[in-house]
Length: 501
Image (tube, rainbow, N blue to C red; front, top):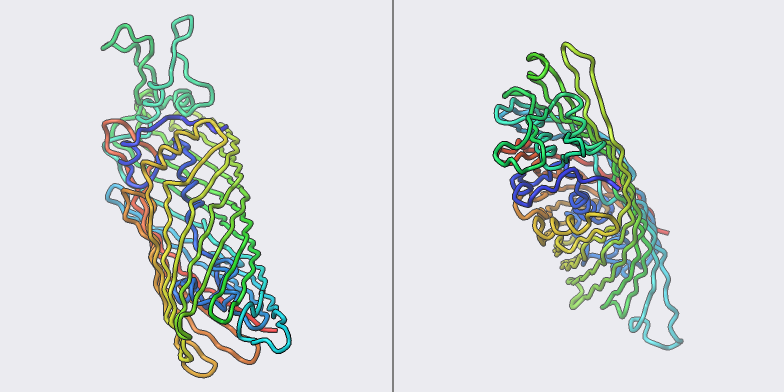
């Protein structure tokens, strides 16, 4: 089980303005990360802002609103690769920096099998259940790739102040009267590497049996943090959709999910260390995390056409129930100008269960031979995210209740049929931030083109995604928390190649 090195108060976490202190090793942050995703879709639907609940007739319906596959009148299949470019700008203690990363992935592969329902001879072939279609799809629903860097000069605190705070909260006195620190804990590593030291008994309270610790680092340090992450979430979906009288479409879907998240985070600090005669030093706090998980969910959807050109859609997605394993290595490595370098690491293996929130959505679409206008809205209550199966899950669920909120996600787009075979598309979407104290909504602008020729089609889409976040590594009581303010920008290109058969 991963050890929680400290139980930071909600006030301290809130002071971090959107970022848990990394050293607290709280699973709540990962739980929200894995609960925030975009439905998998084709390039066409991504171009109209990923708004597809009411449109139907697109392979995106398999993983979105399954009622949409009831609108198919032929079988169809497609594949969608993606190309991604990410850039993160940062501001930390008045200093600006940036970092970037490029990658490519397989985003979507889908197939729908059209199945016309036989009607009795002489019956009205436009009434009753007309078709019952089936669909399979693979979708990449979340990307975790990021390369971020920030650096600056801190004149108010050192991470060694945080190590000393941990030591003051965790040390105990053995039978011989010596202060003992927990084996493998961060504060013990810091003590062994001369970053903190015991300053004797608590003089303000002679009856206090615990020793006091303080930082060995002189005021004024250079600090930097590097974050490199990769991986993503994907769904394999199985859906069924039916058509009733060309008016009402219904659908049911099952999803089998997968998580792969890898992250390496290094917080570096350099300055003057007082213990060894004012020698200079550099110390790195390192975290390597590998998280894997599998889960399942279900979806129920309806689309109704009150008029031929109007479609109304409703989609309900159950929580995803995950089983997750987490392997984290955490440690400190310190180099001194006048002494040999030192490093200590601890490995933690954890297994836990995650239940993500329900997702309830609706949409409207106006469709004609000249194109379409579509819009979706989602409601997600992140406070219902729930963790279980490990020591400390009650603390994490408490943090989720206190720090997160419900959000409304809005998406919309337009498709214009320019010629018989050529289409232009554009869209916009806002995904609300799950944090109560952060207004870092994710905003997406999209545009694309499409070309149809016979039974084949090609769609291309560009999306620009922007959001912001705050990242804090440590928090010391009574001192300002050093926060890296990050501005993320993702430039993505999607290509869908499809055919009807």
